[in-house]
Amino acid sequence: MDCTQTIRARRSIRKFKPGQAIPKADVEAMLEAAMMAPSACNSRPWEFFVVENREKINQLNAIHPSAPMLATASLAIVVCGMPQVQTGKCAGYWPLDCGAAIQNLLLQADALGYGACWCGCWPIQERVEAIQNALNTQSIPTALIALGVPDEAPAARGFYQADRVTWL
Ligand SMILES: Cc1cc2nc3c(=O)[nH]c(=O)nc-3n(C[C@H](O)[C@H](O)[C@H](O)COP(=O)(O)O)c2cc1C
Image 1: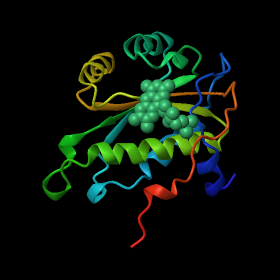
Image 2: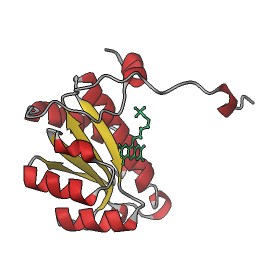
Image 3: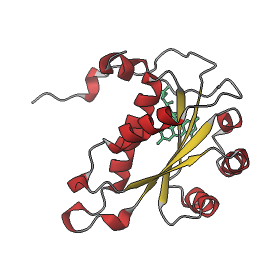
C-alpha cells in the first residue's frame, strides 16, 4: 500500500488476535518511522518505551482508563516527550513533535499489516505521573500505543471537511 492509501485506510484498532508476537525488525521499523518525523529545530524531543512484559502491560492497562485493548495487544509503545532538550526559540514544541512521531508510527504499523490504537496520556497529569512511575522515567508520556495483529477491520473514519478550509 502506498502512502496515499495508508493514510486514508488507517483506523484505530481495538481488537487484536491474542498471542501474536511482532518481530523486532517490524517494531524497529515503526520506531524508525516515528523518529523520521519533523521536530522543532530537529531537536527530536522524544524517547520510546517498548513494553513487551505482560505484567507491565497489565499495569499500564490498570492505569489507563481507556485502553482495554491492551489485554490482547502484542505489545505497547509509550511515546514520551523530553521538554528539556528544547531551548530558546525551539522550546515548548515537544507535544507537537511527539504527535508527529506518533502518527508516523501508526502509519508504519498499518503499512506493515499491524493494528494500533493511540491512547492519550499527556496532558492528563494524574495519568502522566502514574505512567512515569510505572516506567521509572522523568520523560512525559504523551501516548500509549497498543499494537498487535488486528482482529477487526473497521471502515476508515476520516473524511474531508470543506467547511474547515479557508482558501485565500
Ligand atoms: C490524542 C488522542 C487520544 C486518544 N485516546 C484514546 C484512548 O484513550 N482510547 C481509545 O480507544 N482511543 C483513543 N484515541 C483514538 C481516537 O478515538 C480515534 O483516533 C478517533 O476516534 C478516530 O478514529 P480512527 O483513528 O479510527 O480514525 C485517541 C486519539 C488521539 C489522537
